Length: 331
Image 1: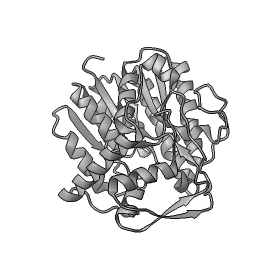
Image 2 (image 1 turned 90 degrees about the vertical axis):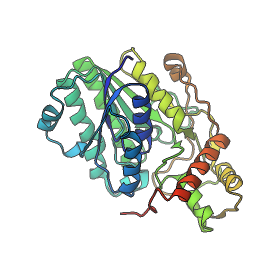
Image 3 (image 1 turned 60 degrees about the vertical axis):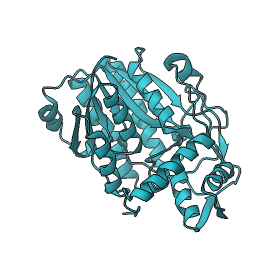
Image 4 (image 1 turned 45 degrees about the vertical axis):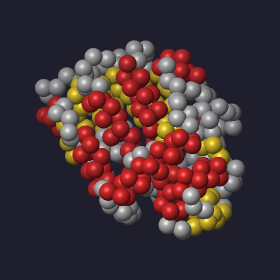
């Protein structure tokens, strides 16, 4: 795609800031919307934004997409012809969603509908939506394929993502713009949210605190490094087909204990592991088929778990040394 105007929601977050940087490096103009949600320390997101603000084609608006009147879109973007929306903003986290289902649907579904209405009204031709591997539930047929029967999500978070996928496809059919849902599989790497497993376990091991693992110690995750995810999103931006759904994973599931052993090796510290019963909403295994993404997007991940965790640990040590980030605290 030649130089484009791209609206990125959630652009101050982990995935969003990497995508925004890549877009800016590629010569695109980016309009970023983020509410700097206090799910984790907003100072971390402010640091992410600083990395993007060095580009003259970066524009930031602090706003909550689930609470904006339609007039906001018309007033703020009336003179901008957008080529695409990359919708990454969401209330994240499986376990918190169990007790905050309304808030999750307000943001993840109602917020998406508001954006779809803007795309329809502004005649924006491409809408890329960040979905999740959680929509597959505990699908026993692995690797998971995009055309698998889906209907048993295990958490409000997963249900909200699936519902947003479905309404996006409806809008695509009704109003004839391209809707692409990208199902992300356990994304990790530099700038990862502090509540996510690799980041959380790094902190616990580094501080000599117990690491609590829930459920079957043989559970697996399809860990996917951030640069591979960004490559997939950029490929979707170039994709000229009709509305579609793609898995973006590594297609090489890793056992939870294996991931911890890699962290131990990179940190040169031993983890104090405690096993607890399985928690509600968790799935046992995730495993992406990426055949469709490879065939149509030429997506092929190149970073394995050893290399990816090494890069993450290097980033953590650098940020600790320079004290760029404030300690994580839950709000």
